Length: 148
Image (tube, rainbow, N blue to C red; front, top):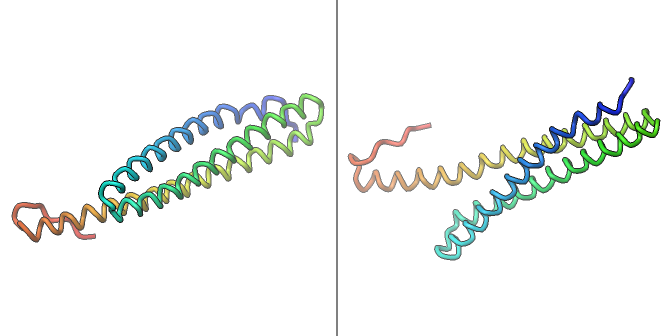
């Protein structure tokens, strides 16, 4: 297979955009954790603790996503250097490694998205329980919560 200096360069824009997205996710998670900790300190709410546990797991996922994406861009850069110094075969191997690292990063991102759904379910379940209590107090005032 013939690989040119431009081939690994194709991955740079994608990795750069992913790193920006991952960083934004990380900052959002950090803010949510801080807000939930403040809420927990005030109310000692068990739901806040469960959400913090989910967010802690997501924070670890995002760090791993960033790590693999950075390793991917490192491999791309080194691959370009090898191709530049006429070591196209080794450059191709390293570019393949960069693609694998990017796939791992994306797989972890998928896992993070699935975990985020779990955190939302905690919040929705709490809201459903609150709505049921309100319905018991004044049944005609509240709309019925749809059954699953």
